[in-house]
Image 1: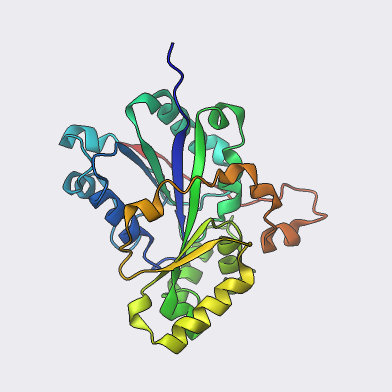
Image 2: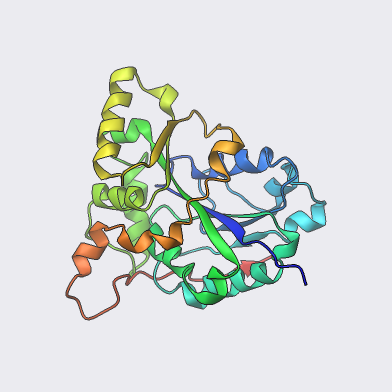
Length: 268
């Protein structure tokens, strides 16, 4: 019997308004026949749903496109991934012979590290690998010192979910997104001048692990070969990526990741 290769998974993370959804849609529009499944933790500023996928060149019929979008809404993807994320991954693992790639867009407040750690579970690890964690940075917001394009909306989002971290300042959450990154996209680079961009690069460099590539983009438009096929195998080294969240919970009696994952699941 033919042994199936591991299915590559790309995780896209970043604050609300950074351009995650724009980047994801660009990837789907330029999929070049790849059979891609999408897991969306929140719709973001543009929204990804079956209707958008039907407009994207993902090499499948309208009916097939509808079955490839997994919406896991109204929550932040963190600790309890086994309750809702795991069942979706089990379904995709069972279908991996019909897929070429999985894209995951996290919520703006999700910590990437616990999600990547979920790929260490034997049932997932034997079938999938994290090709890359892509952190999308809102360059003008970082240059301005706000880190998110809509900090008030981010704070409001945090207050809606009692399980979210309400204490850590945005710059710590931003640093944690960078700490898990295999590729950083400085989005909206065309909206700031050279001095501002240099400031953003310096800010990002302070938090990045060694050898992580940083690239500039406008409206999330980058060649697909830059975004897919990174081959990072992030799950193999994620435990060594220290974050502020780890530090806050050192010595606590509970799990290092006390955030809830998805609150509900709707599979079309």
